[in-house]
Image (cartoon, rainbow, N blue to C red; front, side, top):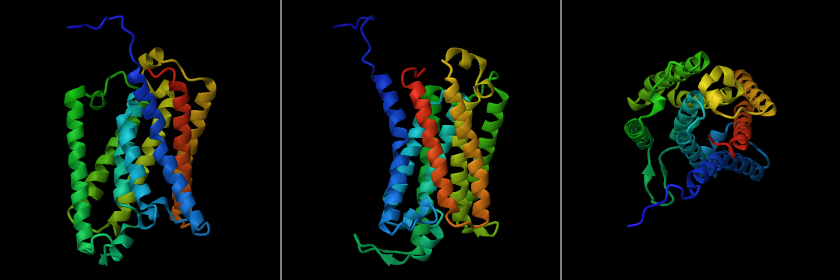
Length: 305
């Protein structure tokens, strides 16, 4: 039997895995952006009202697949600080809801009772609603299993909040938790029990836009963990990690402010029914997230820990 020398050189696989994850995480978002732009070009540069309207178009598979792939990567990536880890986990979790229930799901229901080209089956409105409940129930069950395994196998620190965490991290984490629980109970729970309206609005539209808001909001919290290290990290974390350059810090601040400003301005424009307000807001927020990830990746490429 041979034994491995304690001085044997490591093969670098963990570092390569980390770098591939950092590199791959933004590719689905870039894929989705490019596909929707090219699809608009094929229609004489007539853009849809939102990216999720692609659910009824030729790039439906890209829309669903890209969001789910991004969600998996965000959950798999472990954030540098507790706030970043929380934020990316919540963002990845909500990406699935955005993909599964587009904002035009009511229109999809209204267009039901059509014959499938591949199987010849007739899909009815009732079948779509039943399948949606099955899918959401399955997703929540798998998410619960993942959280359990995360806790048992890794003794997950994400579910423990150390007293040394900053006040800002605590506040933003509480905001995420409360908003997420309210969303699951009121909106997702409403869909599971068969409701189609809530507060006089389509429950499917509420589910989609709430999930999208939680997705974007949590991504901005992840940026805040880099833009405000003195407030969003513990003193020990700041002592252990090589600080970002002044240029990178300024970049994070600009991206953070732009993301929060985009949410506010975009929300106002959407409420005022400004044409293309939804899709422009989505493009801007996705672009800002990609910019944040590239800045962070450049810093962490050589110093991942």
